[in-house]
Amino acid sequence: MGTRAAAARFMGKVAMVTGAGSGMGAAVARHLAAEGARAVVLADVNGDGASAVAKQVLAGEAVTLDVAEAAAVDTVVEDVVRRHGRLDIVVHAAGVDDPQAKQRLADALVDGRRPAVTDSLDDASWRRVMRVNLDGTFHVLRAAVRAMQPFGAGAIVVIGSSSVFDTPVGIPHYAASKAGVHALSQSVAKEVIASGIRVNVVAPGPTETGMAARTPQALRAGFSGPGVRPYATPEEIADIALFLASDAAANLVGAVLLANGGRFTAA
Image 1 (tube, rainbow, N blue to C red):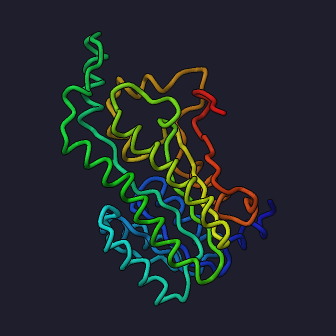
Image 2 (cartoon, one colour):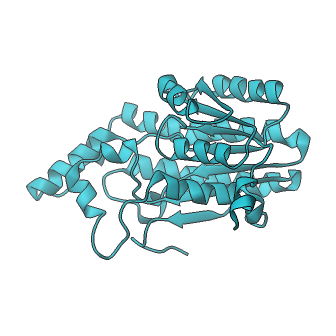
């Protein structure tokens, strides 16, 4: 794609990005603005982080948002439509993992023990991951569909995970939450394409985000090696998300694009 075409890819569009205070969400927001979006709403539970990124984004607006809170999601999306007249693009990048589970896995690897996480996984840890990752995705999808349906058009891109396919040992709650995200997104995609709304998923593998920075080195080493690409950059994943949000992906509906650097393949 030529430079002029790329610059105009999202000309005049109104976009909202969740998890935009860092990592993939921040990269998506910056790229949307650079490619012509007239408004980019950066939503993040860390309002200060969203504000810091918004200062780097032309037409960027920061808002504090916990996607696990349904009413808050509805309010933010309704406000975007009220102020800008419509909502054309949503990229949902907000999500959490479980640092304690990761640490238990790393300790087991270092000690040469069999990993044991499930028997010590408490209800609060399970619910936290499910509330943000799965419930949050439902809240964002529902609000985005409500906002886009009157206009008969829209693109929604959800950040899933390659863990859905390789189901790594020791993070059953994270893998299950993201599997739910994929299935939810694909089901909604089949429903709303009749309204002109496209829903697709990016399933990243290891990516250099704040979440990855908190991953113990013993686990990081397991994802590295000469046979695979290095950890992806947030910008590389953002490029895939924005392709799905663009008109170039008009025939992709309910797709899950696996972006894991060659660590495995899936049909």
